[in-house]
Amino acid sequence: MRLEAQVLVQRVAGVAEPLVVAPPGTRALRVVSEPLDAKGFVERIVCGQEGRTRLRVLKREKGELLAALARTRRGDVVITPETRGEPG
Image (cartoon, rainbow, N blue to C red):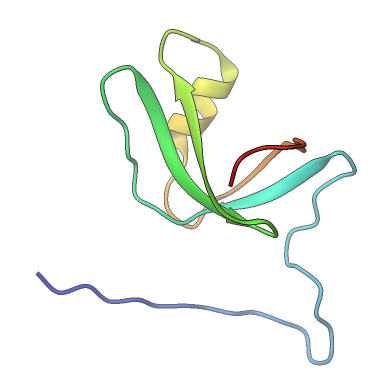
């Protein structure tokens, strides 16, 4: 098996601002994994200003959040509420 890593960085010359700006009280996270779904939950590894973390939603919690996370693919950006004290 051969793994390749490709990174695309888009910046305006001289500007170090993120491409996606999250509204106040939220954070922008980019999905950096393929779907990691297993029995009972939908999971993605995401990366943001705090570094890498996992987003996991239990399948029994049917609703908009589960459907939205299940539709994401690698490279997508998700906006989530900002949380305090979350283990990283």
